[in-house]
Length: 163
Length: 163
DNA sequence: GGAATATGGTTGAATGGTCAACTGTTCCCC
DNA sequence: GGGGAACAGTTGACCATTCAACCATATTCC
Image 1 (spheres, rainbow over the protein chains, first blue to last red):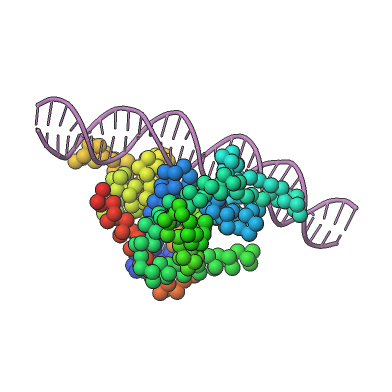
Image 2 (cartoon, rainbow over the protein chains, first blue to last red):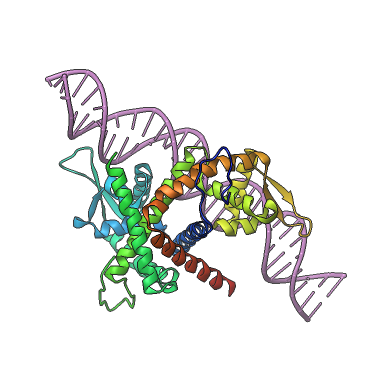
């Protein structure tokens, strides 16, 4: 669909040609980046979504995170995280632990093996991020990209606070 | 992983704190956007990836596209597109047709029913795109975002030409 | 203090996606 | 013009994700 069709039915504000073009670039570009990064990691036996989980755990204070918190960080459903965590646990890369204060809770953390794997993967991954995204943009362009997405993230956090 | 660790093993150029922050925002932001948009369409019985297929078909010259061309446009594997197309075909929204000049080829096009569905979906979708992305950014920010991603797309097209 | 409700996490069935192998067609070039 | 490589698309088995239902624990509030 396209253009501003002054139809009786729709009150929809369509995108201007410029907006349209930018949106197209966004959609296709983000998908290309995600695909390329995922492919890079897949060659080494992991998915981007799994990598992110390991990465978040490694940086979390105390090296552990509750399932829900982690799910929010990596933008996955709790159910999906449960399944993925089970897989990673079977690989021996992460471990679950009950949390004291809240007996409903479960904390995930890296095993030594998981930490090792992550360190190895991080090298290829960072190189990929540079090659696919950073090196293709000027520092200013990349900074602008970061700022824009940061505002989107921020706006999202606000909008879901008032629920 | 993080920080610049002057380790004997790695020659890896890690991300600077600023780069790191921007990259994080990118990753999380793009995922939030994709999730939110997908949710919006799912409420109306379609996935974003399916919507994109319908949308590309509706804008293609002649209203039809070869499978491979479409797959490239929406950044999906040919296999995935085959499966999705079969689903959409069963719904009666698209139809396959053999192409004359190249007897290996298959062209996909919208059915009238598919066009109708798309028109209905487009309204909710455009509203979602505005709400989730456009309205959260200034026009300048959005334009910058578009430019950055356009360069990524462009760079990708160049880099896969010389294969 | 106990019922109602919300939260944290898991489960399994159904659906969607990936991967590697396959068919049929076209292109290349000797 | 015939053999081999490359291309277009499909298939089916396997793996990942979604969705709705579920159990257990916390919280709220009368």
